[in-house]
Length: 230
Image (cartoon, rainbow, N blue to C red; front, side, top):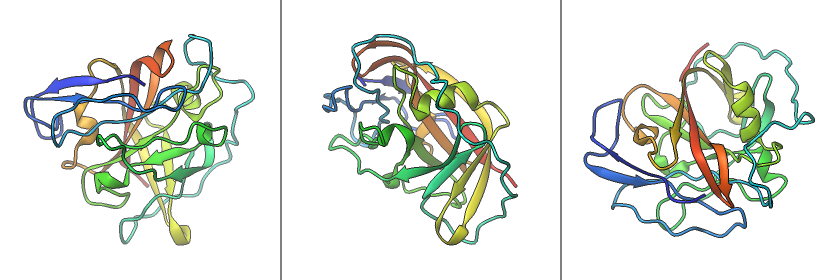
C-alpha cells in the first residue's frame, strides 16, 4: 500500500488531529515496507494486497463462503479484553485475530502476507483501546486480495449497515457490535476519525478497496464503524 494522506481539523467525534496531515501506509504486495512521512504523533493504518501480476478490482471468490449459522445473544462484559477471534455472520466464522506491532513509522501492523494471513484480522494494540473500554475506537484491519480470496473481499461484499460483528475473548467472553456506518474514501484523502480515542466505544475496521492501481496500491479505503449491541 502506498501513502494515504489527509489534512483534518480536530472536532470531537469527527477528526483526530488539528491541522495535521495523516499518511496511511503499509506493506507492498511483495511484503516490503513502503516509505512513510507523517507528522509526529499522527498514526497510520495498514492494509495490503496479495502478490499478483493482475491489476484488477477486488472481487469475491465463490469458494470463500463461510458458515452462516446463527450466533447466541451477547451480554455486556465486566472488563476490557484483547480479541482472539471475530465472527461476522454470512462473512466469516471465528476468524483469528493477530496483534502485530506497529511499524517504525507508527503504522499499525497488518496480517502477514501469507495464505493464512489473508483470512485473519489484525488488532492494533498500541491504540490503547480494547473491546469493553468505555470509549474510543478499537482498530482493526484485514487484507484485500486482487483475486478476491481474502477476508477484506468478503467484508466488502457482505458487511453492511446493521450487520452484526461478534468479538470473542478469553474464557468465552463475547461482545457484539452492530455496523452503524460504512464509509468509502480515496486513499489520498484518508479518514482521520478512524483513530478517535474519545467518543462512544466502537470498532473501526478498514480494508483496501476500489481499483488496484499497482502492487500494494489501491485507489480507496472502506471503513466500517460498529457500536456495541446485545
